[in-house]
Length: 487
Image 1 (cartoon, rainbow, N blue to C red):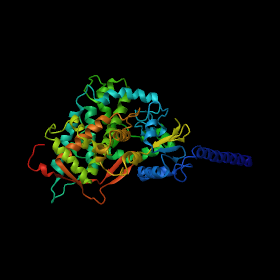
Image 2: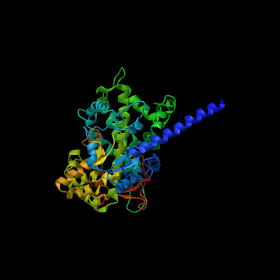
Image 3: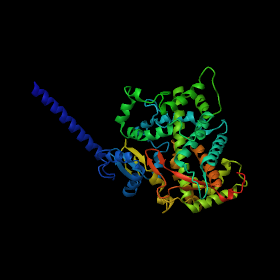
């Protein structure tokens, strides 16, 4: 009997091994014609170790340069570095849909939002409900909200972070500071009142630090579906953050839940803000809560990254900074004060240039149905054919010197950071550009910026979102502003 049981177990084990080997070989053969780093056809080891390093975007850049517009980076994942093909893939009639990778970004493991919905019809349904809220039409002026928060941020700089050219240094941690500004703008747009990050001058809820600590786990769940299945199970639910549970994420979720509850209670609060548009859109109550969380976390982090990156590049590129400040100085006499209007900022070409210089066949290569396609963001934004041989260099002037046809091509490719012109275009794009234009104008009108440690200006990791640490900057008042000129 024991021999029989042993033989059965051996047979089962052997069959399992044969099955694993056969499936691995089949997976390898599907995309064997597509080049890529060693071993990527057999496992996700290459993908996993570079994701853990926090430098995935740099490794993808190298892969795109070495292997061409389509490269294999995992058994069933290819990397697209061709902007034309990426736009086609993201188009409405391409036949593509989101991969299970997006499921890792659910804030509730069992509930989709506009970012994570894989089914194209479901995504379109949610997006249609959200459009009116994100458009800002019929709401309290979002521009006035941006102006109010920016004015408070400038007052914070004047109060705590203004240094002299020589003497006492009062450096600002730029990575955190712009995150606080973006969070207050987004929360004020969402709820009518901000969360008060600028007033506190700190991550007083702990949500920024918590989100940054979660990024690697989110990416690993997105990359390895079995991990996501475990986290999504009922057994794991008690371990997940819950509203008002005392954790940083719990406090944040509780804060959002309370704001949503106010719109549905017996004494309903009805403000002219984004949340009210979500409530009136036809979404369910739980969907409204989920979309509010996504808006607060997603919109603020990406905008803050764009602002601090632009300020950093300008602080390290003297000719670009001088050109921007010359344009600002010429425009300020006719610009609205104390904060320029969005319309006025949009008419300043160099300012806008500073905001920008940041079928189953892909590029003629057959890609079988069911293959997951990742996009090489850094590689596409540094495409030398589109942006020139100095594509990796911060150079706003390229946008002003380009012929009209070339400028349109550059704008289309740069717009891919927002998935522009596709079914997945970022709903917050309009507000992000408004913030960026106003903030750069007002900060560089008033101040000069320089990195405290130019040898190592900051630390960074990229795990889906870019996190900048130790980004200490020295801020001094511009000479033109030292005579008490009204700003």
